Amino acid sequence: MTPDTGSRRREIHTAWFIAALMFSALVYFVSQGGLIQQFLPDEAANETVFDADQQQDRLKRLERYRRSIALPLSATSTENDSLAHAFARLRQIGINWVELRVPLWTATARRLEYSAFELDEITRIIDLAHSYQCGVTIAPMYWDGEFLSTAPRVDVSSGLYASYRDMLLDLTRATASAGADALLLDDLFGAAGVSATEWVTLLDELRSEFGGSLELRTDEQSTPSPYLRQLDAAHIPADTALYYHIRESEPGVRLLLRSVDSDRYTSDMDRWNPVLRDFSADEHALFETITLAKKLDSLGGFVLSGEHVYSVSTSGAVNGSGFLRKLRELIELQFNRELEENRQQLRAGP
Image (cartoon, rainbow, N blue to C red; front, side, top):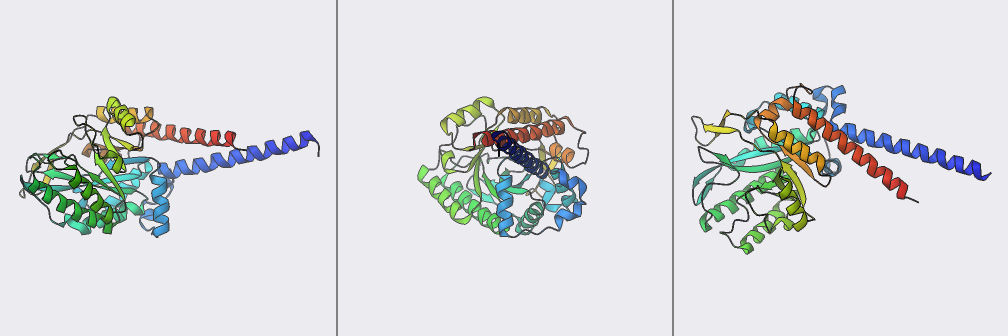
């Protein structure tokens, strides 16, 4: 065999290897973007059952980059068929994660009240999301009959901490048994009115109950929590300065961008339950979040929130909204980045 022949064969093998690599990347991109679902009936995914090994494989793929949408509060009362149709639409536009918000009643400055978090409904939604290969985050929210927020509008006291601890442990046990993938702690966690020892102890207790991802929400008004390095991820607003500040101080923490949710709620006949009064249709915050996500290549993902986001995303009009087009551009950019990373690894190989 002449040197030219050996060289030609190596070139052919390399070309086939690159082609196989690109094909594998294409399959990954299509499956992550949900495009395969466009060629399948909506019921097909709902009939899929995953065993424990398949669940772990699903989570490994989804955790590579999280593209999440917060479900409306009414999701717990939505019929299964309607919710399954919505999940199918979300997968079509590239969403691979959903967030289920659980409203808690803020009764007094010393007590949070809740009703076992409607465990059956939470389990139903988690099971349905998993059947569409979507991860699920559980996020407690606070409702006082006037405002729905990420922290109760009361001062943190020893009494409120005890109630908060009980609530988190109950919610953690419920979400763990239901198979949720992540628990999002709120702005109350880590408050200075409670000792660091108590917060660290609570984290240990939560870890013992929940094997999923423990995450923390921060906002532009707050100093990054000193507990970030003990958690699996931090949710931050689309703020470039805050991103680089946390990235510099805590380089190992996983960061996810969140769009602003400016929907407003009211009380119906039952003050325990918040009801949507009107929603914000301003897409500027969505553009800002997606644009920054395109710019930052070391993010763990993003969360789009609000009734408008959900309704447009599940309407079936894939090209009917500016932010959906921006979302598709972001997914294509991520695909190209991953393909380039694979090419670089190939060049660096033996």
